[in-house]
Image (cartoon, rainbow, N blue to C red; front, side, top):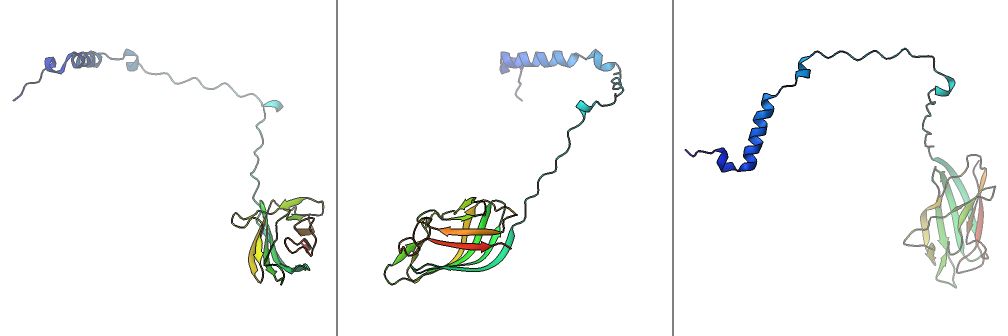
Length: 188
């Protein structure tokens, strides 16, 4: 049997052992005394108007997207045909369900968003299109039809009765590269 003593552990161990023995022999005399309960709170005075609690504000509910079926078609002399089949008005975006075709015997492709493309309300407020990363100008090849959704950043006022969809603002309707096209979309 091997004997382990304090002298083998070193002076630090000896100091810790002595401190532990010393502390074990100490007792807290205050802990033996009964503790008095805390005094009762002072009587509450009538609250003053300035000290009235703040009203509780309920969180604003997020509106449910509103979907409106549509059947609106626009055609440009350059060969672009746009059909809007529906619109979804959300809290952060307005989404158009569309079918877009391009048929032109002169040019092989066209662009729907080479220039400003947006939705405009009656007060001239504009919601710009969210351009897809893989097709920034919304290019469309000759003979191709694109089915999908166009996303416009922002919400439409609930009082809006009509929107105007604008492709390539400032361009002529017969521009083959980027035809200008404007369509009214009734929301009633």
